[in-house]
Length: 513
Ligand code: KIV
Ligand code: ZN
Image (cartoon, rainbow, N blue to C red):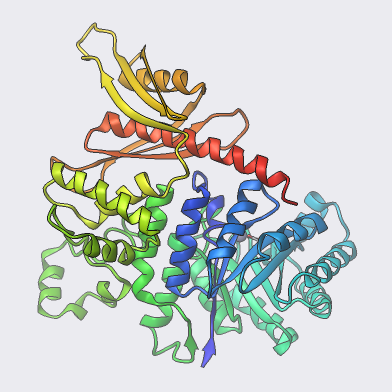
């Protein structure tokens, strides 16, 4: 049996997806779920990128027990040192250092000669080895690099101590047969001296096919993300690779992964609920329609014998068709089990708070589904400490010709502050009054509202992305309520709280290294 190491980079390359930024608490939830999923290596972030990233990797390292925790680092001493400090408390640690090897990157981006690149790669791997045994080296843009040069640099970094050699198709350029040929050639050169890995991007929609072809040609580590999240068109989707190996056991009988496939759907849902990025409905394995049969002929066939139109069983990946949860009479214990099955790792105190909120929800909503619970936990529980908390929101009537206004009471530092504002519309009035009370000046970049489940009494989930500081990325906020405007106010305040916590991380962590 050949073991395929699953290296998940949802928290690093996945987070580079436009708009996918997550706060530390959210990243910890995802990391713990990735561990439950059986991922071998979790790339928890890029420690030198920001104090927020550094802090999240550090916290993840303290909590994850079985998976290796990895930080990315450019081939620079400062980056490597930051990565080493961030993962220092992990049970199993890896430093992943990289430098570009394609002519176009070396000439125009790095402005370095190939020999200078080799020297930098070797020095970096040697330096990383002073902190940790497990060192991965990546040739960025390997897909467009000269194969002879790749062999030369890989030989040099093996000599310096690299244990995993990653071949990224950074811009998603290669065709499956080309990727397979590159891996075959490199495998013949590297032999057993190190593990060969691939990291495929999806610019031409070929990331999964390229990863599979690489496995067949000698790659033993696959870098991928949940839901195929990632820079531009994304990375290879973990669920598609794993389910291809499993479903086509006839072809891949020799290969084994440690993935617990029952955790695929909970992982996908956790990532999409936290990031606000839903997979497209027809996305393989985890899209809303992946197991739906629309046509009468198909429905009839599936009812008679499922395998007529199904090559996988939805239950195998942990999909339970959004099962009806409990009502207001459900107990705390059953609720705790449900949270665990949905992929949340919460403290007893958090479970108690979630349970109280669930009871309030059960009073206003007849039927509560898994998605309601997911939305509730994401919006109300996995959030950083609330610097500002919405106590009440009152809106004026929006009669034609009238002036929309919003009045809020917000708790801050134990005190309640009440104020009101008028605006060009109700939402504008809400944002204005919150800004005034909190001393903020947010610029709304994105606003999304949907109903979490079906029914007239469905919960409204609002996702906002707000820029609080010019030149800085937009911050995500979630709000949940049976009332859309309440959800809007909560989402905006949530984004503001995240922004404040990131700034605090920055203050405390710049002292760290
Ligand atoms: O796509 C890429 O080249 C990367 C490397 C940093 C591994 O993400
Ligand atoms: Zn990448």
